[in-house]
Image (cartoon, rainbow, N blue to C red; front, side, top):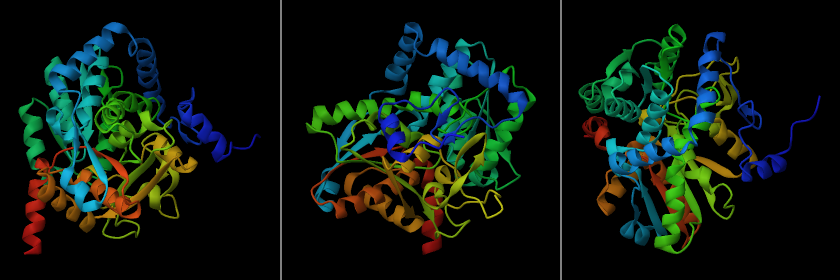
Length: 410
């Protein structure tokens, strides 16, 4: 049996964009661990990807939707007051200004267009913070396709505005009452639905997780973030950043920013996970910082689990980061040292959110606020540096949570 390639060899292949391989592996991570029932629809999805994604007419249709409906390219904003306060040059990639308020729409419209092109009649999706659910509902409304969204009961309560938006956009929202009643339970329920009707249903998975080829597919559609930001930095700042920073739950916004920058090895890639209440098991959602390798939702990656391999419940003030695993490309980025991952706890993220509001007139999502905290710490460690922050979404959806927390504090 041949030895596993070492980190240096994996890094060289990573920089050359040689992942995933034909089995959907990112080094030791990734792959496909699913019931036999799901093999045919996954094979159909992969065949459709290979046949359609690079067709000129599909690319033209996708680019038209991104430009005229989503509002791309999203702006790159220099954060003047944060730059002065942090002693750094701070730039913001504004996915919060995309249609529906977050990066999720890039993947939702891409997958919905692909599903329609392949003749699928019904879309299901999962959501945590609600942004992917809203994006899926909007994309399906745009294309005239029925949409069902699974959402954990806990998240339904703390993201009520997004539930209302999904329903107004024509989606059926199903509150999941079993399991941990958050994003993990929503994905479980969506997979059960897909297993029960695999041939006529498209699972519009919202993050760079799950069985092959979903991590590759989501990265493909989200890489528009990093591709735009790279060129915008050159055009507006006259240089590439010293660091690119993004929050990481499942990892779709972060991989969208990081993937096009992997070969620019002078740029440090910094992912910020949810440190929650503490680093104790069950008190955070930091699967890269605190997890161990394991399988969840059809993918081998880093996972929050106990000594018996049981997946553990997580905690984060941000619904969108409240997931016990992470995409396999992030796991490989960490393994090879190409990216570094740290945590921001609930209080640190909320402090960074308030600072951004007061100094830049921008209310970021609580998820995004984790990235702002990580970027502020990076600036303190690297005076005079240039930082690019992925602003994954806006915080309007979080107002009920913020109001509740303010009430508790008072």
